[in-house]
Length: 303
Image (cartoon, rainbow, N blue to C red):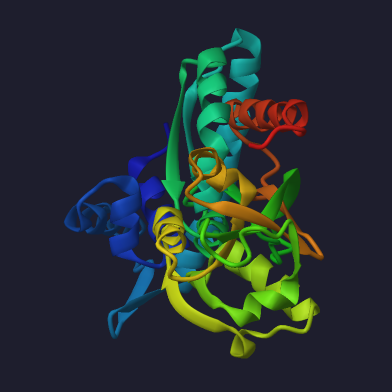
């Protein structure tokens, strides 16, 4: 409903990038540039300084950006109040989730949510935990669901459930017959690791370090960004790894992988993370409440 030029400007100002704004708005970059120039012509002043392939807000641009933020918050408040009167719950929500959450937790949750609220369109973006937190910080997504602690105190972080990590080995591995192994023994074998920025990697390394095992002590032979690739490499006997127990249920049933408990065990929270806006669209509140209740009612299940 708000002036399209103001929406485009606010997106560019938030991301400080015409290219990223074009991607987020599903527009061409020339179209984004045109909208910003029209707004600059309306105010008869530059809103951005463009130097060395980088942009920054001018003083006027900063004031327009601050006002735009207030305007869009008022629109959200107005939208909520009208929808409360009409009982209408609809709209588009963009959710970001780290890989483990997106592949093994959200499908069932979002399927049930969609059945209850068919008029709410949910779009999902998948990245590692660092990427998802960055999207929330930049308002690229409405809600993030991550698998590692979030240190940004300007964001709201709410634990939704606990996940359990295990050591995975091939059925022919010498540890396959063990039920529990000391976490320090991970350093004795070739290790297949998630990429930097992964929540699984961050939690795993943190727990290993508390047990006296540092990355320099480990024989990390591969760093892979795909859970399926890691499982395939372990199945092939190329090393061991540590993954969420929820990600290997199919392989355990087929007998292609073996899960070994670690001592001490590794648990981590799955958390919702979002901005501290005073007013949110009603669809966002409905999704958060639904997700909270879903996690509570399924807390004893393996995702």
